[in-house]
Image: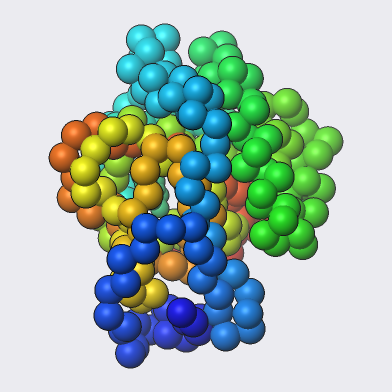
Length: 237
Ligand SMILES: O=C(O)CCC(=O)C(=O)O
Ligand SMILES: [Fe+2]
């Protein structure tokens, strides 16, 4: 299946829904990947421990109700970035200032390592930029690669694009549920992701949402914010 950037943005010629239940790569017209779905990428014990931490009281007290373009859900935002290029900002999310927040990031570092490694295979140029931006930074950044992460204790369900993201995100799917596929309307793709699966996607470009689900569903999103990588906001909003 091919999708051009224009089609993805303008939403013309929407293809039919394809139900995808196997690992796959979706590319644009330049043959560049825009979405890579990898089933059972993460070792089950590591991913189960991450999933369990959604109910860990130490981490849960960092959580708050998040209301944004993704919809209302419960989550913990973790991230920090340092000034680049003069117009960038230096900031921390409140949770990343806490010991519990830092412990969370240290505890699951094997997962961040796997995500960063696979991201480098998918887009080496992006990976080099990300490592350079965060390299001399602090250990807090997820494996010196992803500057920003959100533990979604419950999954947001509104159709959205992550407009602050610098292109790529790695979505680690968590929980035990039925339904809850990730839907990309302009790709016509319904991805049946389960706990332990990974979705690497251009979350800035691609509209996406989680379809209704029964049971417990959450996720961990690792990404980079545009300003952290390139030193200026992509656009005003
Ligand atoms: O929970 C999911 O699977 C998707 C989450 C998402 O798209 C987001 O947090 O931006
Ligand atoms: Fe998203």
